[in-house]
Image 1: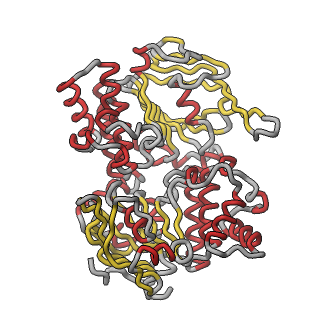
Image 2 (image 1 turned 90 degrees about the horizontal axis):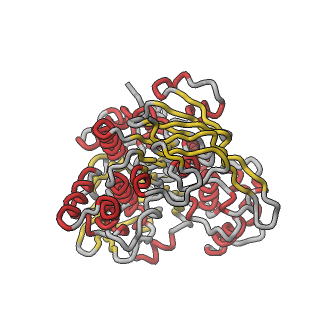
Image 3 (image 1 turned 45 degrees about the vertical axis):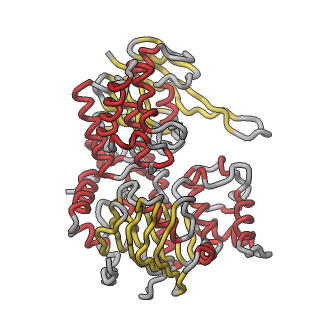
Amino acid sequence: MNGTPYLKVRDLQVHAAGKELISGISFEATQGRVMGLVGASGSGKSLTCLSVLDLLPRGLSMQGRITVDGVPLTCSTSRRDVRSRKVGMILQNPMSCFDPVFTIRTHFKETLSAHDMLASDSAERMLNALEEVGFSDPRTVPDLYPFQMSGGMLQRVMVALALTLEAPFLIADEPTTDLDTVAQARVLDLLAGLKQRRGLGMLLVTHDLGVIARLADDVAVMHDGKIIERGTVHDIFRNPRHEYTQNLIATHLQFSGYH
Amino acid sequence: MPVIELDNITKTYGRGGFFRKQERFTVLNNVDLSLRAGECLGLVGRSGSGKSTLGRIMLGLEAPDSGTVRILGQNVTGRKTLPTGLRRAVQVVFQDAIGSSNPRLTAGEIIAEPLRNFDKLKGRQLKDRVAELLEQVGLSPDDANKLPGRFSGGQLQRICIARALAPSPRVIVLDEAVSSLDMLIQARILDLLTDLRKKHDTAYLFVTHDLRLVRRFCDRAFFMSDGSLHAFDPEKMADMKGSKALEELFNAILPPMPDSERTSDGQRLDQVAV
């Protein structure tokens, strides 16, 4: 667990046609730890992820300083360059992230060739990655089409795609929201295992405090485009200071039947 | 009288590729279910277990292979379109909010559609009712002029919930309708639905995979696996050790609190300036 932050975001602002969507947030995340970002829908969690990798939709502009692995990313091209190589990303809806007319093998080839990493050993790397994400028989997977797989399987393939590029850091935007409870537990186990085995760092965006309780080490609570509270996961769960956080934790504990 | 009654429903789907012989896959096997007025029935199960199919059959959106569906006492099995009165009585909220709202209509127009069709509301009255519904789901009346693309997923889902509430239905099928919402909004929507249930005797079929929500919201619950329903008591989930599949689901419930072993190295992030 090294202390230097891998991803540093300073004073990030996102504007859309004169309206401020994110007003100056700062946070950092280290390797081997999971930084959880929680907040209501529309509080700017996903926009934060997208702006780090220069994936903001057209019409939105961002300002702020982003540093990845000690290198400041001053222009959008440099942010695009770290995408996948240094910072991988997995998204919420695995079903619509894959092209239904191509097999999983083709998806791997495309991802590797897009980063000039297609080599003679790429088939082996693909199988290794698939094995690492928990497919007991990885050989059967590459020939499947996305529609032949369940959401949980596809989400694990998405993680495997991010792993083949050997990015030391992962941005996970609601990685388990669309999965059923059992599949969700498996994907979270997988991510926890990757953190331990590979020392993978993660920025985990979710609205489910159960996911945070399961996986996060540090938490930042977002509300209306600002970070209103931050701390370790234990601080946030045991002594929430901000009224909104207190409310959130209380509702979560009530839902979970915790007394 | 039950508002929706399913009797001996069987449904199979064809499975397999274009080039191979299709095999039939039974999703529902002789399922009986009756939903009474003012009741909230939870339906849980893994994805692909047939929860949504059952919901769609209850709504008359899909025809079963055999068995009968009665809505408000009328047999509607295999009817392509429901009579207006019945169509109004059963509403649905799907999981995919983006896919179930027309991107070219504003939020106001989306919610106004059932009001125009069923209640023949116009002008001022219509506008007021739309504003009222938007406020009920925690949005602002000003949001009525925005297009779906301007909302986040959770906000759009609330618009879909408002649309389902608009014609004051007798039954609402909530197909993973609140799973994409954050907990505060979930709590608020569930309180609103409970309120309507008390006032208007609205019944709900609450399809979900989140047992935490079932515990909070439902009177009766069924677990679905291998095409049949197994009843369980939402209050007593801790002693659900009977079925292996249900136990698996129960064990996958997320922890309420972080375990104390993690993050014991004392590293803190609060040196970071806010």
